[in-house]
Structure formats: C-alpha cells, structure tokens
Image (tube, rainbow, N blue to C red):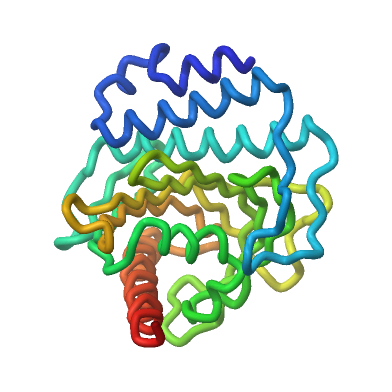
Length: 270
C-alpha cells in the first residue's frame, strides 16, 4: 500500500496533480518524502518532549500500526485539500473564493497577508493549538487526545455559543498533520472516528476536511507571511445550504480578525 501512496503523493498516478502550482507541487512532494521515510524505518518516532502548550498528561499512541494510520490520514487530507486549491472557482469578495465540489458542497479559500513570521504562525496554530480559545472566542476548547510523532496530532474541538452564530454549537474530532519545507509550512486535517471517543451528548458532531492551511514567508520580508486557508466542512444537522454558505466564509473572516488581534497583542507585549 505504501508504494502506491508515495506514487500518488508525487503526482505520478494522476495527471491533474502534475498541473499544480509550484507551491502545491512542493507540498505534495514533501508528503511523499515523509511517507517514504516511514516505509524505510517502519515506524514513527515518539515525541522526546512535549511541545509547549500541549497537555503533558497525554500518552503517546503505543501501537506502530496506529501511528502509521493517523499519520497517513493527516497526509491524505493535506493531499486532497491541496488538489482542491488548484481551482479558485468563483470570486466571493476580494479575499475569499469558493468552489462547488462533488456532492454540491462548497469549499472556501481565504488568502491574507499577516504581520508574523512563518514560525510564529506555526507555533500559534499547531504547537499551541490547545491555547487557541484564549484568543479566538469562536472556540470553547481544543484538547489534544493523541500525539503521533512530532507532526501529527488527534484533537477534539468544541465551538463556542456566540451571538450571531448561524450554525450553532458543534464539536469536531480531527487528525491534524503538519510539514515544513524551507520558508513554508503546511497544516492539513480531516475528520476521524474513534471508538474511544464517540459523539458527545448535547453536541452535533460536524466533520472537517480535507482542509489545509499554507503559510509562506513573503519574499524580502520574513516577518510577514502569506496565509492561505481552505475551509471544507460538513456542519451536519438540518440547515439550509444558503445559511451554511453564508456562515462559513464569515467564520474565516472572524478567525483571521481574531488572529491579527492576537499577533498585534504579542507585538505590543514584546
């Protein structure tokens, strides 16, 4: 199975992957290299230390099969999300584009310039993901359930009950994967199911992904970054598509506004 996955990620099996932009092709190649590394060693290295901001009581996954499964799930989510980014679709404002996918679901692409380095954004959005509720009022909490090597985690997220929330409160169970390549970072993710963590009473379990964020340093100014976010979500429940398609891009703009405030606060304190 692994050789086929490597072939897929490198764009050999599917002609449309060969038409990717240079940035997207680089990301897919990085994923393929990571899978090749896993195949060569037959295992994923455990964390030697717990990253700052993550729960130190979370135990690593003991089984090598589980580690490989979660990592492949995160990598596959990133590959699919990058494929969706090939076509920007119809414009929906000056920073968000939308595209209708098979099944009539819309995905949304946001692009922005942020006053932060790639490493600073990677730290906020992946390493310290459990602290996200402190600066994003749309999130009630995020908890890391499993650490799968240094680049893959399994998380449970609960959205907050906020005024004007058209969709309502949801919870998410996701696998998140990251990879770094020179002056860029790629964060991918998708919904996952765990028998040990079934849907919680009182919540509608929505499904993320495949989704991804690309963070790329601006040429000539490494203190600023180009931020691309593909939002692909099935919110579940009985909601009109018109409401969902209005709420999701609004959520992207709200998230970006809160992120900018967090970055400004860090600069002021620094």
